[in-house]
Amino acid sequence: MNDKIYVVAKLIDINTGLIVSSDELSLQLKPFLSSESIKDLIPEMRYPITAAFRSAILPGWGQFYNDKPIKGGFLVASYIGSIASDIYLYSQWQKYLNTTSEGEEYEKDIKKASDYYNYMLLSLSITAIIWIYSVIDAYLGL
Image (cartoon, rainbow, N blue to C red; front, side):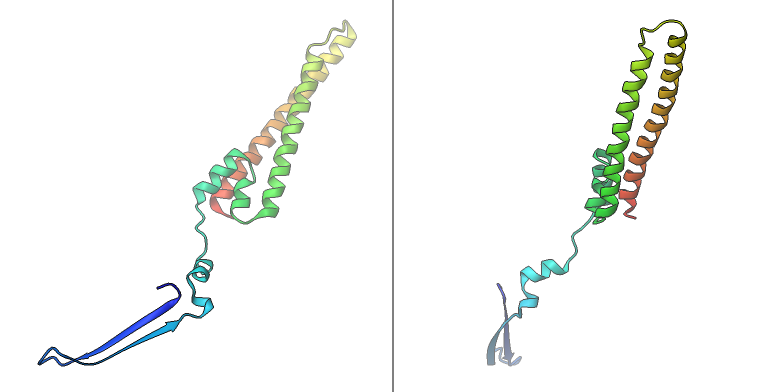
């Protein structure tokens, strides 16, 4: 009870059922055995599905949950950088795709639009790979 242990000992005569002798003892637990410190000794449960779910929402969040902050920070930064690259390449693709130039300039703009489209597909693939890797890594707790 609380931070004390109570010990009660009774010596009973089995023929008569009478208590021959009785004694009680109460011991104060040492601080390292208190109920608060026992909680510190038991590790917090980590659930792989929770880590994977967090990384599915934001890549790297599951790594933070798994106490891997450096890997988590790298994945968050990589994912945000990849998204920024996707947005930039999309805007450039749209810019050259919707060109108003004519003749030879039109051909150059359409070629640039095609190049930016291909770069954007590559960037989107990298974004997806980062996302998938983050979810799997968080689930496995590597």
